[in-house]
Each structure stands twice: as C-alpha cells, then as structure tokens.
Amino acid sequence: MKNVCALLLLTCAGTSLALAQGIEGEKWKVTNTMQMGGMSMPGQTSEICKQPDADAEQPPIRTDDNCQIYDMKRSGNVQSFKMRCDGEDKVEGSAQLTYISADHYKGRMEMTTGGETMVMNYEGKKLGQCDGTEANFVAKKILADAERQQKLAEQQMIQRCHDLAAKAEDPFFLMQCKDPADKRTYCEAVRKPENFRRLAQQERRNTRNAYAANNPGAKPLTESARICGFGLEQEREALCKVAEQKNDLNFIATECPIQAAGVAAAQCAGRRYTAIAERYRSFCSEYASNQDEEQRQQSAGAASTYDGSTGQDQPQDAQQEQPQTTGDKAKGLFNKGKKALGGLFSN
Image 1 (cartoon, rainbow, N blue to C red):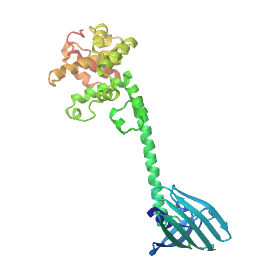
Image 2: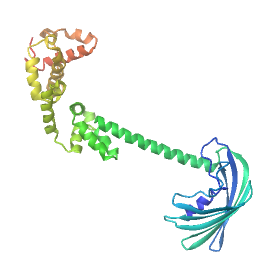
Image 3: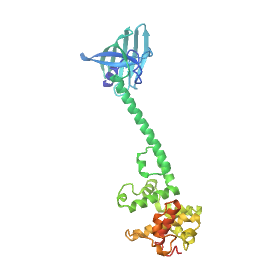
Image 4: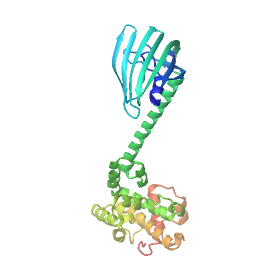
C-alpha cells in the first residue's frame, strides 16, 4: 500500500515526467486526498514537471514494474482505466479522470488491497512552464544517474577481470570477479612460461624484502598454484622441459637451475663477456646475477663487489660511470656475478 500511495502522488494528466534536464515542459500542481476505513487522510500537494504533447491515451499514473494498466477507455473529456499490481502488495483498482480544460483535471481512483478499500481523489492544475529542476525530476534524475554509474562500474569491472585474467596479472583480484570463466582463463594464462616466470621473479623479490614479504600478496605464484590446483614444482619442472626443447634461455636462466648450469658451463665458462656468443650474453648475465644473489643471501646480506684487478673488461669505477645502455646493463650483471661463480667464468 505504501508503494501505491507513493505512486499516486506522481499522478499527472495523461503524460510522463520530463526525461532530461533542459527539456521545456509543463509544471503541474497535483493535490491528493485519501479516504480509507472511514478515515480521511490529510491532503498532499506536489509540483511535477511533465513533457508537453505526450500521448493522451497513456494512463495518468506512474506505476511500478509489477503493476499493469488495462481496459483504458476515452470518451470526450473523460478517461477511465483499471490497474492490477502483483507482488507483496497486491492491488486491484479502477480510476476515472475528467479533463475540465487543457490546464485542469480532476480524478478518482478506488483500490482494494489486503481486504480493504482505499479511495483517492486528486486534482491537477497547470502552473506554467518548467525546465526539469523540480524536486520530482531532480530525484528521478539522481536515481537514474546512480543506476547508470553502477552499471558502468559493473561493466568496467567485468572487462577488467577479463583483461587481468588473460594476462595473469595477479591472482588476488580473482575474488572480485563473478564470472567463473575468468578463473579458467587465469589458470591457463599463469601456466604459460612468460607469466609463470614473471610471477616467480616477483615472488622472489618479495621474499628478499622484509616489508613486502609480510604483505598478503607477497607470493603470487604460490597463490596461483593453490587457486588453480597444480603443484608448483611439478609445473616448473614441466615448463623447464619445454623451455629446454625450445631453447628458451630466459626461462631456463631463472627457473631451471639444472639446465641453466649446463648451458652456463657450455656457453659462459672460461669466456670474457665480449667473447660470449651474442645470443647467450643475456643468459650468462642473468645466470651470473642469480648466482650472485644466492651467495649474498647465504652471506646474510654481505654484498659482493668486483675488484678491477681480477682482469675484467673494465675497472669498477669505469663501470659505474659508463652510460646504462641495455648491453651495458647486461655486461654489468655479468661482471657482478663473476666473482660469486668462482672459477666458472675465468679469463
């Protein structure tokens, strides 16, 4: 009943409310009185803005989605219709409007709900022009804007879930994704060598950082394995076999210590940096850097430094001053890890 009464307060002369601010419409003053159970309720007055030239055959009342207007009739200046509402408040009713003039109408609606009958009398008078700034329109516009923003946010979240799942960016965002397909997409993507390697490296960096290691997202690869239901080391071993077949040196350098040691012995050992075949330089630098990092961890954070007297391509000071090109960075990593590897990389 409460919903029905609220709807009746928005009654207008056979027209719908203005749908967009800035559309010039007609301002109407609508007065409603109600009688129920032998009691009369105080009258209520509201001002509404309606679109001009609306279809005169439309019913002069706004209803919820669960209400149906039917059996509409128009004879001269008199319009009648019936209404039925389902849901929590079931309503049956009929109404009749009399258009006294183009600027004035009166109406009566009789409704039955919950075994009781309610009679609503209402009168509408045109006040002049309006521009959609009236309270009824503003409230409706705010609600419509909020609904649009919510739908837009939901659509953006759905698309973000699709994108992040395809890139295997982060397993922790999956809890925000409602589509089961996103999890399947993520679990397929995370087992690709490039994504597996990226998350593994991120996890190793986090474990070396005391602050990051305490964060919930510190172990993205471990969490991915848990979510997707695969054994982490078994998956790494399988990917290492594939990397060996495809000669994927980047993956081997960081994820496959056994294969990496073999490649390093064959392609890096006993060679100066500039003497290493170009295709293996990045691998040798990465491998040397990894070995250096492992030694530093074993030495409780003692940093390994290079002594220029050991016969490197450039003295240490010169390395610090040289421009940081891609090749220079790779060479620097190689030199940094050379001492950690002992005799593996000899002159």
